[in-house]
Length: 423
Image (cartoon, rainbow, N blue to C red; front, top):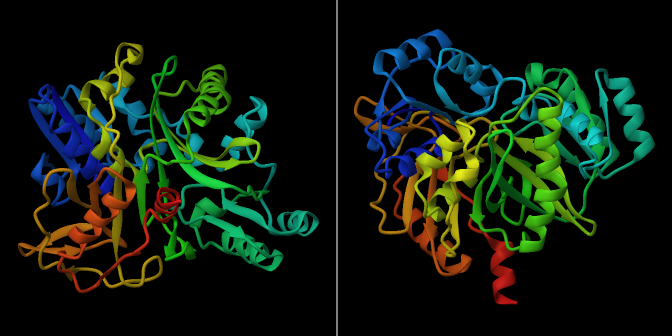
C-alpha cells in the first residue's frame, strides 16, 4: 500500500514509526514531515494548505491511502477534497471536524444528545460573558471557541482571572479563535484522555492516557499543549471505559450521523472523572500530542489496516491488541515555552534508544546539516516498563542523554499513577 502521512509534529513521528512497521506498506511519504519522520518515510515538500497540490501529488504517485495527523488541515476540509478526488482518507470531514474546531458546536451536540458535560453558555461579546461569570462565580472555565493550539482554555480559580480570560479572547490573544467564547462550569475530578476510532457506524475503543497540561511540576503554571503523558490511565477502569462508550462516544457518533455530519476518524475525548462518572471536557478529532506517542508504544497490532478500516467503513472487521506494559513520554521544550523562546537552537545529539523506547521529534529541522529546535515542544522522550514508575525511570534516563542546552522538561511526569502504585 502506498501511503501519504500529513503533518510534522511528534504525533506524526509516532504514527510514522508505527505505520512503517506494517508489512502492507510498499511506499511511504510524509508532507512536510520532520527529521525524525525522515527515518521512516520519504519527505515531500508539498504545501499541505494547498489542497490542489496535495491531490496532484497523490495522483502522480498513485497513493492508496492518506493519513491526516493534525487538526488544522481537517478543519480546513482537506479530507473532503481528497475524498472527492477518489482517495481513501483517515480523518473527518470539515463539518465533522467542528467537534474540535468549535467548542460551542460540541457543547450544543452534548446538549442535544444528553451527553454528560459541564453546564455552559456561548457568548459573542465581553459584557454578557462577564455578567454571566459574575453571576456564576468561580472556579469557572473560559474557552476560546476555535482552534488555539491547546492554549485557549483558562481554568479560572477567581472571578477576576475569568474576566481577564474573556478580555484576552475578545482582544485578539487567540486571533479568530477567540471571536466567540464558551463559559462553562468547573468540573472537579481527575482528567483522562480516551481514544476511540469511528467509521461513522462502528466504534473501536483504543486506549486511555493521562496528559500533563501545565508547564510546571506539581501541575503548576500556565497551560501548554502537553508536557508529557502516560498510558493507560489508572482512573479509567474497565467500568469507566464502558460508561464512556455508552454515555459519551456512542451518543456522539449517533448524534453526528443524525445531524448530517457522520464522523470518520478518531474521537479523542478529554474527560473529567467526577463523582457522577465520566463527563466530557472537550473533543479533539485527531490523535493527542503527546498521548499518541504512548499509545503507539503500547499498540501491538499493525496500525495500517486499522486506520484503513476506519477510512473505508469496515471498522467492525478489525481489532486492536495492546501491551499491558505502561508507556510514558516526557516532552522536552524550548526554554521560555509556552511564552516566547529562541528558535533554531542546536541539538548536539539524540541518544540511540533500545527496545521499548524512542525519542520522537516534535519541533525539529535540519539547518545546514545540523539538527535544530524550531518549536516550543521539541522532543518526546518515550519508554515503556512493567510499571509507570519503571517507564518513568527509563524515559528520564534516556532524556538525560539528550544534548540540547536550550531544552527543559518537567521531572514529575506520571506522578499521579506512581503515587497509586506506591499506595
